View: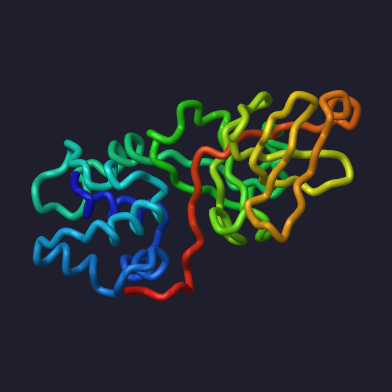
Length: 221
């Protein structure tokens, strides 16, 4: 399986066309057809765009995998390849209810390659709705989150506190408490002393381990 097979599998799993893939990944229209018909390889810049859209690394995108004949556009055993290459995580409407198995809380499912998920049953996705984490994360981006109640200093975390919306912030651990830092300087940091965290309570929902960028509508090359 080469990079083109992976793109076709990705499209099949999401039930999208190649042209939609090109549009949403931010690459030029007709490139997939050119790669298929002329045997071209995408530039490294284009590889990075594709890998970001598929939520995998460039290395994993371009690494050859067994399971398809040379020149084939789709795996011979699609079910086997799907099970081996793609896992789905739920995009939750209310991340504080993660683990409740309430189907009404699931807005959609997003395909993620398994090298990102060491513990898929404890992972979920959520959509970023504000600009507090720009430029790294913006409205419409979907982050992949692994359940973690004791994240480390420097982790990007999802945090819930009474009277406040669930937020995505960088965690800074200090001697007397924590600071939740936005990347966008127009937003304020929030601090909690350790004794406050138990009384409020302040709870870590999980740490961000990946993202699926919303790049629809951005100019293509």
